Length: 101
Length: 265
Image (cartoon, rainbow over all chains, first blue to last red; front, side):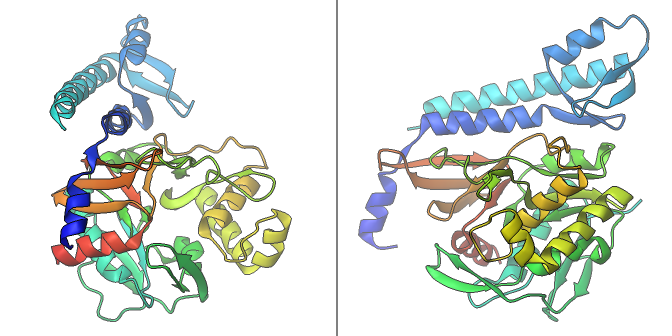
């Protein structure tokens, strides 16, 4: 890399909007997890669905719209853990992005 | 049930796909904890858990803008992957797919016989991939052959047998689907195969997150393990960069990835 290229390269400013979009996409993907042969998205929607189930077991549709028999408590804990882990990681990365120039 | 990744790696005049696959194998083992097989014609190929030697089928050529050259493209063996894989559950990856997270692990734990990406996007957001997510004059939905998860099953076998039929009769299918480019592409064959096997109804399940892609005109550098800096010109032609950390992506330009692989070796 010659001097001109180095100067041009160093002048490439950080693109906050693109970085935020990429980070969002990454953490949205990380909310997806497999359990009991089904694919689930950790978050309030799944957790609210699970909280409406009166028994310890239920059959609900996964993201591929397959009916899956699940243990409600098991899936609820997995969903809550993943959701909070990834949201915390997202927050840390978001704060780092905001400091970047 | 055995599980593992599989990469096709046939070198051409400009790209050392075997070196790329070796580097990718290390990333795959580190993140996904699975063995890696390679299908290659290189008798010196090392660093894999299983090697299948194969003389490459087809001598297509394709223009790669990052090399500004039209080079040989050995891409026709991929349709025969069902018989070539040593695994019961295979994660078929392009040599230029960068594994930087454990995201793909979940595909081994769901009850699906065949999954691929239906949607790809430009990681920088500069290029609109809408045109690339469809193909042919009639805008058929495109499935991406970059990442495919499949289990030994009637459904997966049928898709790959259909791909082989399309490959072997490419001229006919190219005309049928009004594809302008004469070069056989696995993405097109896969798309036609899925469409056919699904009864021409677009309801086949796909991988639920988009295929993040980096087009050849953007610059890719590795800054640390699983960290990459991407430099690009935005819509106003201003130089910008982003950092991609712990996220898988498809490096469509081979030149920058080759430099990263060479520096790692």
